[in-house]
Image (cartoon, rainbow, N blue to C red; front, top):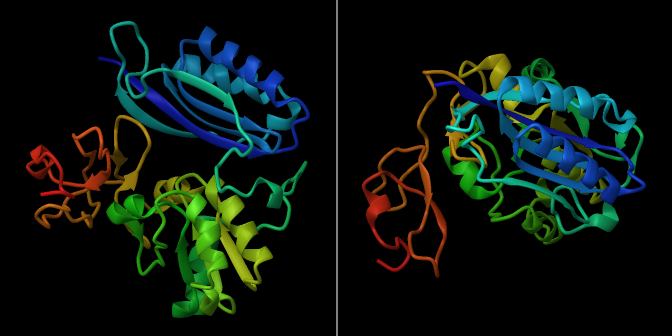
Length: 295
């Protein structure tokens, strides 16, 4: 059975009419039978879509025809088998919305964007440049995870600082609390799945007095494509679709621990009790337990 492809992408650029962009993007994706999520704001575009290769290639070509989106970096990966109608089964539907932020840190007034992208963010590092920095500065380099703690539980850079964050909105509170002030004079490398959260997070850190802030260009996805499981990354990459997580090679370590029994696993699942609906790192067996919080 044919397998779908999934694209992950974003760009920061001033958009004078986000709702017009929403209508265009919705019509384009619908006409191609694509599913997934696209978020638009006055600051730019953030999306992940799944579908047949030919349809996604056409979407990429048409989207890049818009001047503000010409240089978007589309990251490709394999999805699940296409359904009987030839549509992606990784996403239940297509959602295209306008929001105050393309990634919700709860600080839209702090973000400044121009035609070149985020103003005042961290220095971009390619995967190779990241290795050079670590080689030169050694243990002084701090990896700072820009995702939520659940994502980091199944995969992260070795020795990374993992903030106790359930959502991106927690980062502003944690930074303002002074919890990470001891890192302000050290080289800090922010990283996230595809790079978008780091764009905003690094600018928030710079504005709060962190002296030397970097961001991993292209995120964990680009790093994994370059180094697979032979570099500084450990474990699986959490993804927000039916796949749940992906590995960069057959040699990926399993670093997650089941919340129920402590078994090594890279599996996550939501609690089956609707009133709870908490997502855990959980093995196949413990996933059958009604609620790990209340048992």
